[in-house]
Amino acid sequence: MRHVIALDVGGTGMKAALAGANGELIHQTRRATGRERGPEAVVEGILDFAAELRAYGLDRFGEPAAAAGVAVPGIVDETRGVAVYAANLGWRDVPLRELLAERLGGLPVALGHDVRTGGLAEGRIGAGQGTDRFLFVALGTGIAGAIGVDGRVEAGAHGFAGEIGHIVVRPGGTPCPCGQRGCLERFASAAAVSEAWAHACGDARADAADCAKAVESGDVRARKVWQEAVDALADGLVTALTLLDPRTLIIGGGLAEAGETLFTPLREAVRRRVTFQRLPSLAPAALGDTAGCLGAGLLAWDLLDSTDRTEVAT
Image 1: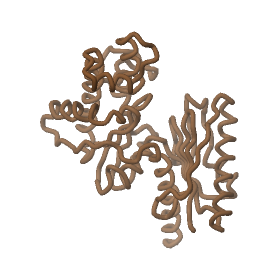
Image 2 (image 1 turned 90 degrees about the horizontal axis):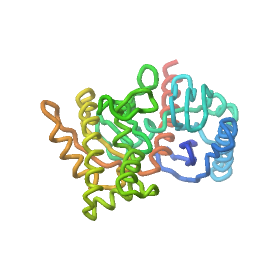
Image 3 (image 1 turned 90 degrees about the vertical axis):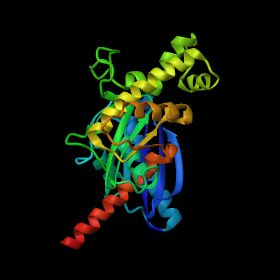
Image 4 (image 1 turned 120 degrees about the vertical axis):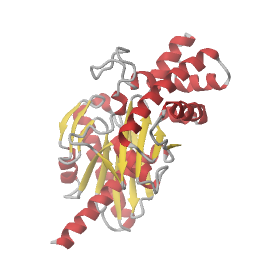
């Protein structure tokens, strides 16, 4: 059975799969990233994990994987196949595509940014399926996005496209590690809501999920924290849709797990802010934590398709 290797590398865990020709995950497994062992050990762990997947596929299907796709966090140069920078993993200029290709016996390898890769999957086979233009926004520890156009995701000239979390929504506001003040992710990420709710309720262990539950139970303090986050998010989203004019706006990540506790006020907040713009449909992400692996698999198949087209042309 023809298949590809798909790897989704996170700051704490790695999700991996073998993906079939229709994008389906035919084998899935996970393990810790092991970042406490240092950046070089993390790279070695990724290479070992990929090699084990190749061996498993060969044993189970009688043929090796046709290609591999890998999604990693941070700044990614997809053209050169280099993980330029990842603060959580301690990486700088890691030639991950080259290292993986060497470990996998010359297998074609595609490298992608984790959020853009997840957005690719959501756009093609998830909540944005059939949509020509979408914006995927992941509300996690930070906030990042993926701009989808006709089945592909735009990386930008320097690999920075989609960094909606660093749109300034509160000028002069809370300092952001990026060097600006008032960035969207300082007010509307899961981490920001957790921090605000922990301060409001006096429990240092409280997080965004606890805040959402308190909102649902009618807690006035929680509703204030939640609405401030929703308003900031709506400001950032309207700026983005003014620039990009997406047909569908897909919201994922940990904060989106609150369901209609988030989506009902968010739809209303966005609607109130729209003037001349066309209001996009606003939908929750559909693929959950498999989006990264599914997207990595799609990157691998795309790589094979482009190779096949090149060979036919020559």
